[in-house]
Amino acid sequence: MNWFSCDNHGLLFWVKVQPKSCRDEFAGLLGDALKIRITAPPVDGKANKHLKAWLACQFDVAKSSVILEHGQAQRRRLVRIVSRAEYRQNSPAWAFQANRLLHL
Image (cartoon, rainbow, N blue to C red; front, side, top):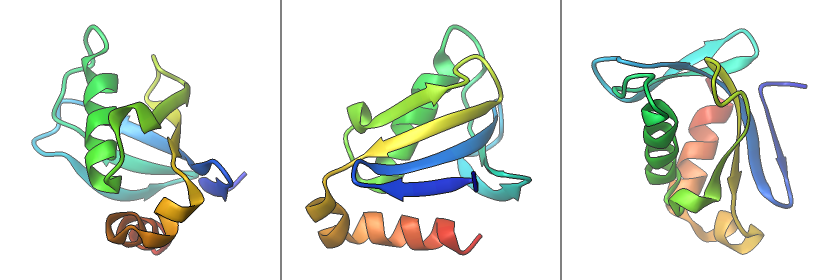
């Protein structure tokens, strides 16, 4: 599998999370995963909660639309961003982030 795939349910991609960073940001590709820096510490699920909220904001979807499918307690996680096809076609935020991710 590449670092991402897109299906009828949304976008599925691998991320490598770097907690306790100085800012939240996409930090490029690292092997077969997208590296994401987040400010939250890796304690009591704070990093996962922050990651989901930040990704929801980046893709302009509800926090409940960001699902950690695998690796919740690891640095490498499989993330799904669920959205309806008509939303993906009409959302400027979705189009911008998807295009940005594809060109890393």
